[in-house]
Image 1 (tube, rainbow, N blue to C red):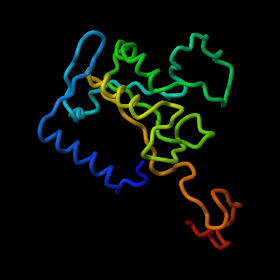
Image 2 (cartoon, rainbow, N blue to C red; image 1 turned 135 degrees about the vertical axis):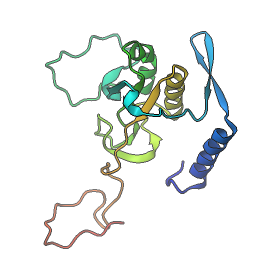
Image 3 (cartoon, rainbow, N blue to C red; image 1 turned 90 degrees about the vertical axis):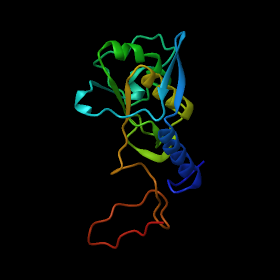
Length: 186
């Protein structure tokens, strides 16, 4: 698995995407009993202001094969509810019927273990197994594109989970004030 955006594996994927775009390649996607051909890569809209965007938090949206009633509105929980990428794919027709033309998905990349919302990314190159797999994400994107819809993957670059360690202290260190020497970062 790549650990950097500069690794050959990532460069090869980006080169293939560029090549597909230049060659105007297509991909066949099965939607129900129909096969729909979509371009790869799928072009972004000319103006995003023309899109109706449906935002969802993966963990809170849909857990496949879960027939329980949802938690009462008043009940608060910090526990994971188990929504997945496959859960979104199962409900993509419902989202489209609401009039949405794009789905904005909370972060699905590898998070710290205590994160339920996705905004504590530890690995920007890996889908969090709690939400699904790389192939689940590819299937969601393909199903959306086959319906003429867009997927927006939320990703927050200016803050993340534990992605580094302090030399001699591990990933946790005591709080220090500005007038104290700073911890060296590994």
